[in-house]
Structures are given as structure tokens and as C-alpha cells.
Figure 1: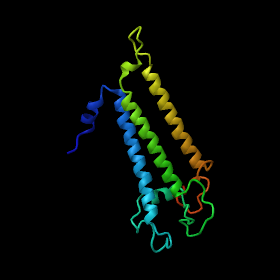
Figure 2: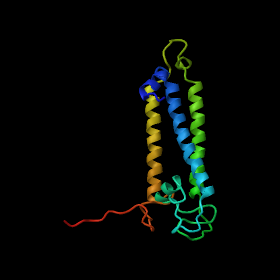
Figure 3: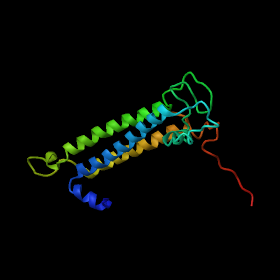
Length: 183
């Protein structure tokens, strides 16, 4: 039995902390699934023949998306291009999976905190009875900081400053390129 999104949201509509908490928990579940699924796929993946037995034929779902974004090395000493490597760096398949699991844990803790401290009466001034928090300002600051974090992560990843760099170095043609077409 599925409920439409607006029926589910009415349960926590007047509790802004809990409304935020359920959304943070959803983010934690998605990130945790991505990290744990990547680790599972790495455990069953056979990189010995990438031509006749590619990852999609082995039933991989998460690893092809990571490869498309430029992750090609593993801490196990293999590369998706067929060679062996000695220093894959932090941003390998296992590193990205671990980062997702750590992010999932942090989101889980944030969701628990927002669920426990959901009551806005805690943050009221006892002398005046008015809220001592400027909620739109706090929401705006959180929204701005998450936007800066997402933009910074994307910019660093795409340019190659922090990560594989899908625009700067794409020797295997994983991301494609713009080609001119003459009419």
C-alpha cells in the first residue's frame, strides 16, 4: 500500500525538525545503499577479462556509473582498463564506497539529532515567550552551505583538482565530447 507524498508529509507537517529529520534520514539511506552496494559489487566482480566478460554482463549496477564518472582503479591492484596499478589513491572504487558510507553515518546522526530536538519550544526565550531562533535565517544558511558544498565538490571533481577529473583527463572517452555537425 503506497501513500501519496502529501499524505505522508502531513504527519510531520507542524514539526519542522521532524520533517527535516525524515528527509535527512532518506538521504542517509540512499547514500548507505550506494556505498554498501558498491562494496558488494566489488566483492563479486571479476576484472580479469573486461572485454569478453564486462561488468554489465556480471550484473553490476553501481560500478558502471562510478566508472562513467572517471573512477577506474581499485585498492585490489587492478584497473578497469586491464592493467595493474600500484597506487590507486583514495578515490578508487573502495574509496568512493567508503565515502558514501561515512556520509550516510553523518546524515544518520544529523537525522537523530533533529528528531530528538524537534520541539521549537526548547528554543523560546523564557522572558518574552518568543522564539529565540530566526528559523528562515537558519534554513537559508544551511541551504547556502549545502549549495556551496555541492558546487565545490562538483567543481573540484570535474576539474581534476580533487578526484579523477572528468573534463580535464578523459583518456578512455567515458564522458563523450561535443562534435560539430555540418548541415
